[in-house]
Length: 502
Image (cartoon, rainbow, N blue to C red; front, side):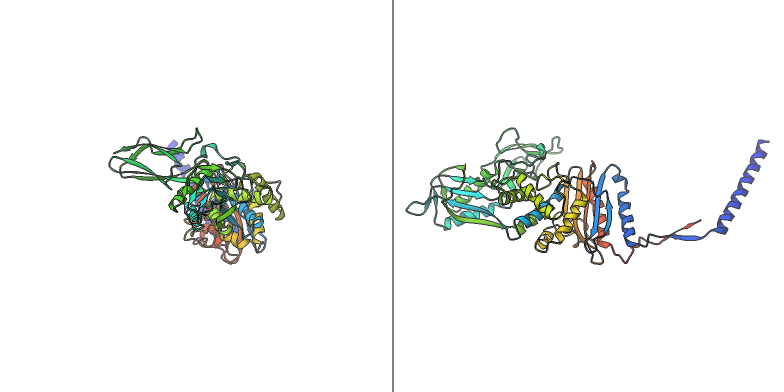
């Protein structure tokens, strides 16, 4: 009996399915699924699709894109949210520097000497004074030493006096992480700096010995080599660090290393002015100038002679700051702004004060964001994508400053921190933007031209993630490529249209 009822139910079910299918086929039409024909809507859909990835579920993203030709907002997503801008703060530091210091400003480092003896070849003291040049290098000290020799001096009877009084004595940025203290990306800030206030440590091994060398080679740093050569497995990876419990520059090399290896690491040093003085003393020796005394701290008297000077144009410094995202360049520049247009010694606080006056002049409400340093290392900085785009828009309207500002930014697929990003995309060679990276934060802000030649200003800020930064950079690169490929007259085709039967 159950078998008969089951057969009837199955027959009834098949009959109903047949009727339903026939009805659908008889009334059905085939419609293509197409993208919106409005190119702006298509662009927004495409960016939204990127942000809909599960990657962004726990992440806060703030994005804004504006046409500089029409003033229209092409896209925005939580653009008023205050975010950590990381190194995007260097955009503001650069703009303020060009406005306040001017496009022809030169950073300098000067050499002075006391009154000479009657023979004219002996100086009592030699003074090395820094005015905040962040790009001074060992080779520049060699050039200064040669200039001293050419002036006729071959002996310094007393001391090398290093003068870093142009800046205050706060060598560390507000809101910087304490455990970054020897990191080359968080160097000590000083008016008299050399080699980014860092030294390169090189560990090499042969069959059974390890050795440690320094670039530049100097007695200013003490090295303790405790590295162990292993043959087959590493239990304790090699670690190169500077001791943090005293005020010396002692570098410890510890851990396991394979035979025939070479490992390098840059370490930030304490007491940058004395580091510069130590290297200058060695430069003087190479220039056949003998120094009897020591390196001491002091201030250049008002009535002594300047005999040599090294200068660095602001345009060159800005390229280093932005293309390489150099933090010392940004911090020194902020203090120079404070020193020259507020009071000496220059400080970050005074620099930010002058910077906010500049931003207010661009129409920005300085009560609605927080800036405490010049580089973006601080966790106290807060800006929104809307504010950064407002700044970028205002900078585009400054014909005196904009070319130098624009040319200092990394170019996608070409140079700087964007050299290997967006290659072989419409953004390559086109998109100019500043990167920004901290643990859990990634940003990209700048300019890009569309396929029609329309100039866009954009800011993309992403934070509060614990996964790899590269994943969010890839999302930024996809959006940057979309902006570069955008056209108001063409809707990009993603492939053949799909069909659906109703």
